[in-house]
Length: 85
Image (cartoon, rainbow, N blue to C red; front, side):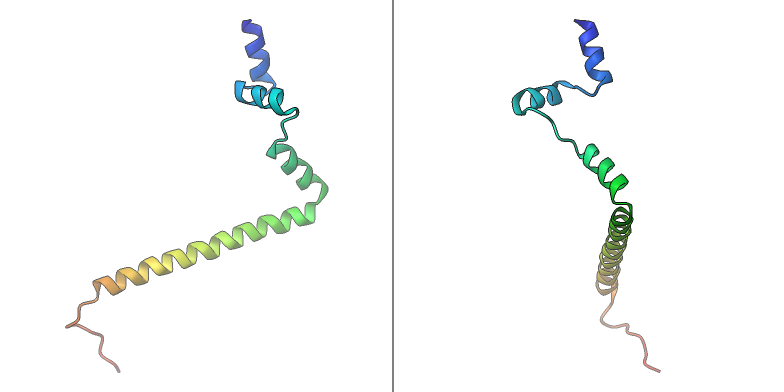
């Protein structure tokens, strides 16, 4: 029986995926979708990657801007303010 587990590990059949395949039929994986989408629609794939990177950059910018402005407000002392001019 030891050879069966090695065969399962080599071909990606862990107990959870084996159970899923036995219960449902065929296990659709995200890897298959990503492989076929990236090879069939290269321009859309590139735009998707650029969009994800741009969205995460904007999200991080907004997050850290909020954090630093909140810290500046919390550290501001009522008696000491910047002089105008």
